[in-house]
Each structure stands twice: as structure tokens, then as C-alpha cells.
Amino acid sequence: MAEARPGRVVPAGTTGLVNNTIEFSAVDGPGNRFVVFTQGCNLDCVACHNPYTINPCIDCGDCVATCPSGALSLDRAGKVLWDASTCTGTEVCIDVCEYDSTPKARTLAVADLLGQLRPAVPFLSGITVSGGEATQQPAFVRSLFAAVKAEFGRLTCFVDTNGDVEAATWNLLHDVMDAAMVDLKCLDDDIHRRITGGSNARVLESIRLLAARGKLHEVRLLLLDGVNDADDLLAATGQWLASIDPRMRVKVIGFRNHGVRPSPVPLREPTAGQRAHYADVLRTQGDFDLVVV
Ligand code: SF4
Ligand code: SF4
Image (cartoon, rainbow, N blue to C red; front, side):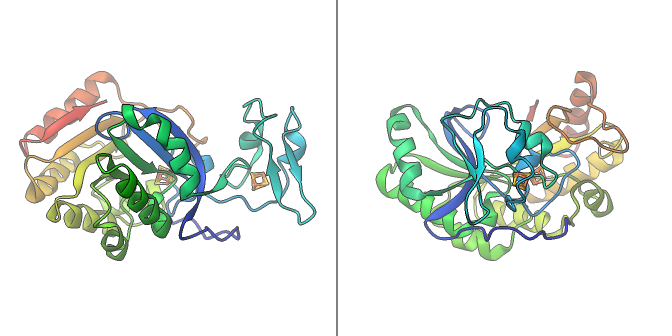
């Protein structure tokens, strides 16, 4: 696991540290969804597509002078300020940051998010919190979901998670959360540690627990050519998933290099043929509801 770095205390309760929001998404759970991307993650994946969401900003100031539109500044207390109205979206600040962070994350109240959500509600199926790792801010997620349920009862509330989560967090979210999409980066713990920085023990336990409670929407397998895609490993993964639910919804995701940090050993994207083969291997183990992307 990545070593803890000094940083801002992640806010709890009715505010959260948020990287971004998307009003409409068709790829973050069922139907059309409003998505909240939180800032901060407890893993450090080599294949992370959003590495700037991993850590809260530590206000080192290194990015401030690099902003071509002057949208960044330091206040008297040494805190980095981002002016959204002058930001031109070049993301030079993110490129220059050595802490896998961004100066653009904002502390938002649940009420702020409800204000963004309200105009979109007629066109939405639900809301998804993603990351970073949303469950790192469990009190915020609970408050947000509870508020969404209270005001817009028909909207579903989903969590997109790396699964490295305490059972206590799932207990906290249980009555306000409809379901979760859980990443399983590898069934083999050694490989999992190599590619995420952490053990898969809590990931496996999260999948078991959520399935037993009827709260598991899908398991996502991100597969990297030559890293976690061996046939015997995939067959064992299928067998393990089938032992929980042979009809489980499983999404096979072929790794893509876009946005990923440079790696000492270059990571390779599987071909369409390889992705189809992964699905064939999994099908030998269960009658899964398989999606391949
Ligand atoms: S769990 Fe997700 S956000 Fe966290 S490092 Fe891994 S890929 Fe990135
Ligand atoms: S975003 Fe990164 S470079 Fe900029 S102040 Fe924060 S930690 Fe430093």
C-alpha cells in the first residue's frame, strides 16, 4: 500500500472532498447516472487511469506558477486556491504534481451536490459515487445517499469501489445504498499487491459480504496483458466468483494506457481477441452475466 502522506484531513459528515462531478454518465452503473468522483484513495494502482485522484493536495505550491491562465494562487495561510472561472483546463498543474493530486479538488457540502443534481433528476436513473475511493469518506457518502433518498426517492444510490473496505463501512452504508460495483484487480494476492500496493483480502470479503446482502451489482476485472490474465488465474477467478454466485454480473475490462502513469515495465493493452478469450475462460466456470469492454 502507498505510504500515508501528510495532507489535509479528509472532511467527514455532510461535506466531502470532491474531485469532480458528471451530470450524466452511461458507464458508471445502470441507466443514466449523476456521478461524484471523490478525492483520495487507499490503493496506488499501476494501472490507475485517474492518478491525480489518489491523494488530497498537500499545498506544496509547486503547481501554482505553472498555470498558464493564472487560475492558481496561494492564500496567506499557504493554501492553494483554484479559480474555476479562469481555469482553461490545460491540466498542466496535474502534470507537474508529484503527489498524485490536483489543486482542483473542492470541499463540497451535500447541499451543494443536491443543487447540482436537482435540474438533472428527470433524466436520471440514479447517483454513483466513485473516486479515488469513495468509501474513504463514508460519513459523507452516507449523508449524500440519505439526502438523495429523502428528496428523490426513485433514484438509486450506487458505489463504485476498489473493494478494499472495512465491513463496518458497508454496515454504515447498508440502508442508504442500493448496490456497489467492485473491482477485483487479481485473485492472486501477490500479484494484487504488486499492481495495487495492497492485499486483496478485504476486496474478496467485500464481494462476499455485498453478494450475501443483495448489494453487489457487478464485479469488474481489469486485465493487463501478461500481468493478471493467465488462463489458470482467470479460471480460478471464475471458479471463486461462481462459488459466490454463478450468475454474477462480471465486467471484463481490457487495460487501456490512457491517463496511466509511466511504468518501469511498460504495461500492455490486451487486444480485442484477448478480451474475448478472457470471457471464454470465465464462461467455463459459471453462467455469468458477462460484459466485455
Ligand atoms: S483503486 Fe482506483 S483510484 Fe485507487 S489507485 Fe487504484 S485505480 Fe486508482
Ligand atoms: S496539487 Fe500537487 S503540486 Fe499543486 S499544491 Fe497540491 S500537492 Fe502541490
